[in-house]
Length: 319
Image (tube, rainbow, N blue to C red):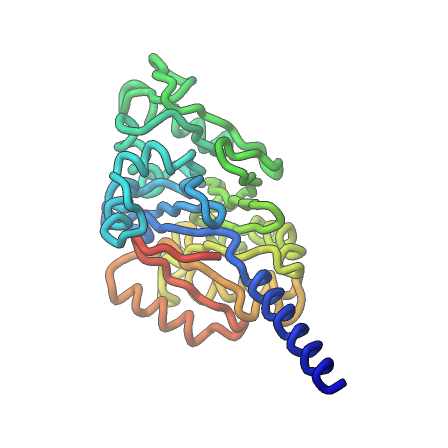
């Protein structure tokens, strides 16, 4: 009987361990191609994300492309040429807004790229067509817009709140509006892979400063995913330290405002729902002493038990 009991307990332990490992299995892999908010043109906002164990990447914003791929190759993340990563691994681009630090890599690399889709909201796509791919500022590599479209890229407009398949991947995306110096709009992208999600926010100011409730509405939409542990992480910007005054935030967040906003999310999702939750900090603006301050302030103000991640260019991590 004792032998049977020991065997039964051992079997339970093995099953529990296997179940725990399954629960902790990564849903997404992320390779940052650029992580800063300026002024280093070789390291501006761009994040490759793909379902775990695949090469089907979508690029979240595209401030830096080529230099980021080269850095990832240096770090042995990719074992193929820069051209092959650009042309074959990147299946498309999700552009949160059309400021140059979020699109310059896409524009500059377009002559060397392969045919794929650019996804953006209507306002963002209009800016891309009218100001960049317009046959004057740059050749029109799209399939519509001014001049002579070269049809390298398919321009696909995202409808707010509507789930859209991402071509050549098994992921989908749902767009939510953000305020980046009201009334200028940025976008948050909710990426779905099976039953798992990741949330990427383009540049955004806090609701209190922007005088609207865009972030509150976003938190309301994702709170159930936090409760059910389906949301694996949030990419969100912190551009300035707390010393930056509201009038000079220019539609960005500070550590103080980020924590305040995440408290709103926790109130909706439940107490301790954000403990050990992954928050990926994007768009830190130089100089280096500002970045040091931001990291120190976030560490001191992290009363939610967040797992704060500072992505590094060309270094892979998982969600």
